[in-house]
Image (cartoon, rainbow, N blue to C red; front, side, top):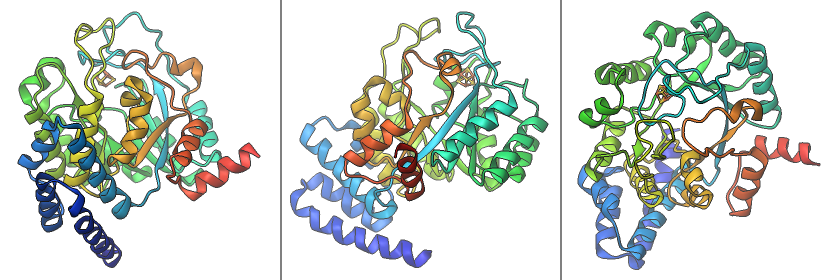
Length: 367
Ligand code: SF4
């Protein structure tokens, strides 16, 4: 494996040296630093986030794309998300399913039905099932552990969990039951802003839990929101550095989307352009990360979600939640449905690839 990685890096170095002739001096400095250090530092990340010139922006996207395609291949991984409950006991100011929102219809999908949805997803060719929900204690640790075990062992698929804060013990049990990936966004590393929009979340606890998840051997995901009120480019650069230093392997960064009936409903949406710059900077800072082109970005503009696949992203999460439930998983307004077949076709039309197992199963299903 080490030999493959170093061969890929050799190939990458050669390609990056080749394209230096078509790049401006500032980008060549980024390339040189990256080749030497296999990452970027805070100043260089901030420089990318600050870019305004359209031509230079597109060139840095190209560099990030080359890094991704050579180190991680041109295969876009498709993961299936099941949003199994929109109950949440927390009050995050930006979130449409926060406990205080009485306008939405709450639902919980029964355990047997969740398993069935996962089974359909695997039959369609997905190799990772993400179990996602608000922080809902109605599902006990025992129930979730049994569900994870059944999905992982009976369907022979990877299980990822995105269920918020649970005890360390619970996460240890879920890991042993077969969950190999976990997503717990830090949202923003600026403590002051974090605390101002999370009245019932403990900043230190969240960071400690993230570190614990890494220690438990999970492929650990985190991420931030781009465009939160009061956030600066420096904050975003620090978010990226935080994820690099904390060994985060999956990175979910989406633009802030203002959501009605929440305390932040009057703030403007985050910028899709800035989100793309954050993807490019992250790809160069954490080159091997799994980084989805997020649904939030697709909600702002679907074109940007696909463009992100040429700016450093290498994953798309497709939605498996049945429509009767999904319509109420309004973590933000107008959240789009990312459909598996439509997304796979678009990726192929772009000249990119999807995993062979997914391609085979979708092809057979469509024939
Ligand atoms: S962001 Fe997560 S924890 Fe916060 S209210 Fe929404 S679902 Fe709950």
